[in-house]
Length: 263
View 1 (cartoon, helix red, strand yellow):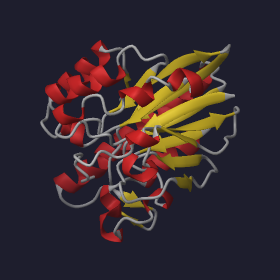
View 2 (cartoon, rainbow, N blue to C red):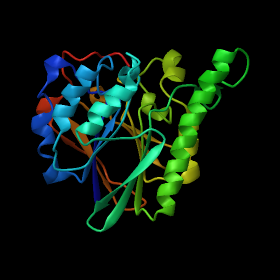
View 3 (cartoon, rainbow, N blue to C red):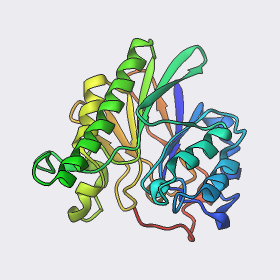
């Protein structure tokens, strides 16, 4: 059994240092790896990234992350990524990584993803150049996710997880205003997951959404935005092509009142 801890949208700043560390230090008792589903900072500054880095440095399990839209706000994602990597975090964008757990190979493929909407209510590569680029960017993210998942399968991974910030399905957006669904995710991400195969898809971004969803191909999807799970992290138990219910951890580290709640 593989135990995957996951949380997103922790939106850390200088005043939140130490908020999650006590819960994260218990990971060795309940999880084999920790996934961070983007929006780790409030405005994407290197200083905020250093707060996150201190929160997750030298944890007893591997830490794997993707960035979110907040982490891009200051247009310094390379610096944010460098700070996190210096702390031992594997930051993915169109890439995969493998974690060894008791002889099993667990593959994680990650991309931030982007918006565009869902089947029947989505944007298309038509019209103005800016609209075309909007959808093409989402398509590139999805293609990177698909290729990474496929590569992990070819490497013989026993279990594969898709990690994104934006949502691959509308199920986990339930509770958000319908008008903003196109800005919360894209069906192209779910198509990539179903095409390559995965045992679990994890995302954040939708603060007012719902935890549980599923792709049309039957892959479980979990929205782990902290305002949704209201814990320091949830743990999902995977058994090769299946999963069990999540176990919540870190009740005392529920959503910080000072965090920015905007998606």
